[in-house]
Amino acid sequence: MFISGGAGGVGTLAIQLAAWLGAKVVTTASPRGEELVRCLGAETVIDYRTQKFKDRLSGYGGAFDLTGGQDLIDSFAILKRGAKTVSVAGMPDATTARVDLDAGPLVTAALTVASAKIRRAVRRKGVGYRYLFMHPSGADLEVLAELVDKGTLETVTDRVFPFEQIAEAFAYLEQGHAKGKVVVQM
Ligand SMILES: NC(=O)c1ccc[n+]([C@@H]2O[C@H](COP(=O)([O-])OP(=O)(O)OC[C@H]3O[C@@H](n4cnc5c(N)ncnc54)[C@H](OP(=O)(O)O)[C@@H]3O)[C@@H](O)[C@H]2O)c1
Image 1 (cartoon, helix red, strand yellow):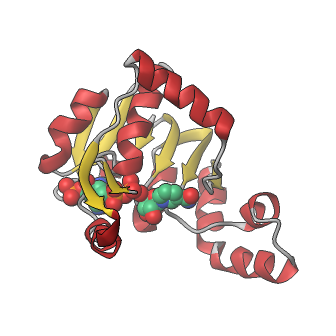
Image 2 (cartoon, rainbow, N blue to C red):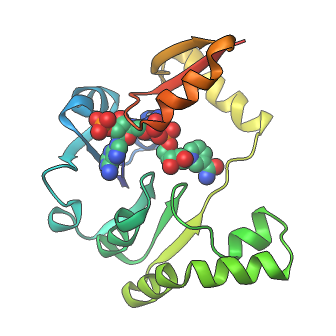
């Protein structure tokens, strides 16, 4: 299982969940995040600043894309035929518009056009693609809370901001270098 951008807020949880489900995890991180992602269960760490993961990996059974852009397109190249990339950072496609957003024909058509490059790459490689929108789910949170209670899942907090500094918290997050979650305390 390949996860791009493993050292951030989503990646630190995704690595642990994938490893818990039995996957061998490969992720990209800079040297600042390498130790953290290894501790969380990543077996192989590729420094995204000096190496292209697509030059090192092939035949993977699945990818979780957290960085989007060219990384998303490159993720298709490292999959075996029939495998799938799920992204939270790429371009939503028509399926996302219909199924997740319950969108009308205009939005669906706009996302179909906007995701054309991705769909072409997917077809060329014979793989699958799905953009995921997070939805709040009490049932899912219950499972995660149980894993946290058992010590199977560790929450990694980079910084905690008081509520009055919520703007600073977003500005910090937008710099894109968080290691784990950025928390705003209510
Ligand atoms: N679709 C949804 O519902 C949904 C929900 C949540 C999040 N998201 C999206 O998911 C993405 C990830 O969110 P996040 O909260 O995990 O981000 P984040 O916490 O801001 O991620 C920051 C981390 O990513 C690393 N990084 C930056 N560029 C990288 C690259 N090119 N390759 C590998 N690592 C890289 C940074 O490492 P260094 O500082 O060490 O370089 C840093 O540790 C974001 O685009 C976010 O908007 C979508």
